[in-house]
Image (tube, rainbow, N blue to C red):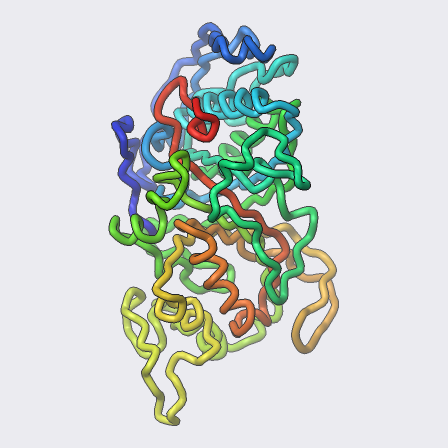
Amino acid sequence: MPQKEEPEGGAPGHGHGPWERVFSRRRFLAAAGGTAVGAGAMAVGLRLGSAAPQTLLGTGYRDGTEPFYGGHQGGILTPAQASTYFAVFDLTAERRSELVELLRVWTRAAARLSSGELAERDGLAGVKGHDSEEVVGLGPARLTLNFGFCPGVFEKDGHDRYGLRRHRPAALVDLPRFPGDQLTAQKTGGDLTVQACADDPYVAFHAVRQLARLGAGASQVRWVQAGFNETPASTGTARNLMGFKDGTINPRTQPQQRAYLWVGSEGPAWMRGGTYLVARRIRMSLEHWDSKTTAVQEQVIGRTKGSGAPLGRRGEFDALDLSAKGPSGNPVIPVDAHVRLSAPENNGGQMILRRSYAYNDGAADFAERWPPWQQALMYDAGHLFLAYQRDPRQGFIRIFRNLAENDAINQFTTHTGSAIAALPRAAGGAGGFVGQGLFGL
């Protein structure tokens, strides 16, 4: 797993260590007054409701918190939580000022939720409501929330609707269509990404649910995907639904992260220190996969299933030996093995940070892409692939083009959903908001 990030720029102190089990503490429910509205928001006719209760969650069985303000956004280098709720929103805001106020409201709410408080009662102007409170008593569960700007923020159907077109980073490209893609409109596209991660699925879903409520009138949900992960405290690198460890080759050291994860001087000022997210919903043909022997599966992946070691090696983090030959003269790691084709050695040295989750959406009628081409009721389950990188053109696009054309794993996987987003640095502190530099504020 990636190491825990060190907040930058005078960030607040750290929360509890990853997966630390903290005994529940009694907390008192309290109420406090509302928040004032900034003069800028008043000028454009947007306001928050008068009541913004400071109610803390009740007695919690997971009290660990992760910092929200300062440094990089959470949920990137944060040790992976057990659950995620990933949502992509369409913007319905007509004016730039409404988009700014949406981001202010969401940032303020995310900070409260991350610290274990309930969300504000009222959202944007005219939007009334209250927190659903289904998480009272659960604790913050190491909740993190991060926000990303998709290409639609900068240009939609050729229209520069918010006057931001000239600020679109060159690296925020529209993803090309790859061989084998079967993307559906129901799981593709959108304007803003929101990812909630927590050690409790209730807490993750609750956070996105509150943001959707608070942002009504300026945004609406386009598509969502819930995901789960094994708790990797004792098992090391988490396994995907195919049973293999996922994310072994990640940029783990700070020099690697500066080189391959965080945007540098090549990006616009508002994105420096941020990163780019590529999200892909990948359905796995688990019935087909489960019919294969472990030996066949290991040839497809290029690693041993138990230890995660590259074929021909003994430890998970041993370097790949791509030149090794077996007794027959064939490569020990097959030429079409997943790890060979995705290795930095075969992609100009590029690395991406994978922080993915499994998903299970029940079952549906599907037709297999490869022999025996059966059509039947099969699992709608697989991989919510989440990859962070400094430049998607050199990272995901370069690597996945190679995989899409040649990877042996393609006979067991189908990409059905997709999004790309620019994730700036976290809000600097109370009163700021995520992406503030984009608007020159």
